[in-house]
Length: 280
Image (cartoon, one colour):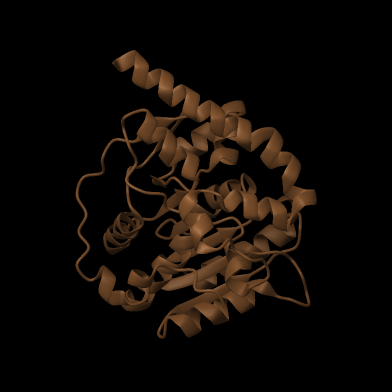
């Protein structure tokens, strides 16, 4: 299996000396605020909150999420109320640099699942996975849980749930999930249901597990399980991961990426340029 997590996050040693200070103000891009943190800084924020008994929610905006949030006051409110908002999309980092107020790094949800799992293993935290592609034969969520436990000895995966389509609108299915969360009592929950469904689900589940941290991680569970392939490292570094995703699933993603996401990336950069010029 391709190595997905950053090498420095492979053991708990990387997190032993992390320190947190007062959060810096969010950087405004495309109408939403992004926290100026690195991947390790995000992990440190989560660990610090968990040690203090505080739960939270992480949203990982990319250009698709920014485009959707422009059109929805409700989505903008969910993002604004989240405890940690990190730049999953490279164009957000590029735009921040053009604007003269640079974000320190891209922080992808598909990387955070690994670094948070490494930290959880070293701290004895309990992790649950929710989502993945429903497929009775492949069972990607359970497979992802097995891979994480194998990669990080001592990791406590207390739930691997892949509910059927529409579970969030079915009272009996929702109650069943709530009961699982209550029994498992996780510290971290990776929610891979796609935006904005996963964000709505996280908001509702926070009332059930107020001391847990929820990470909206999109296709990350499928990536871990090998059910879908993530782009090569060089594409992740160069901001062309979207192209790999589109070519891997053209019927599902081509129209969305070409019609919505590419224009949104151009719009972000143009807005950043105008902002820089206005301050000159």
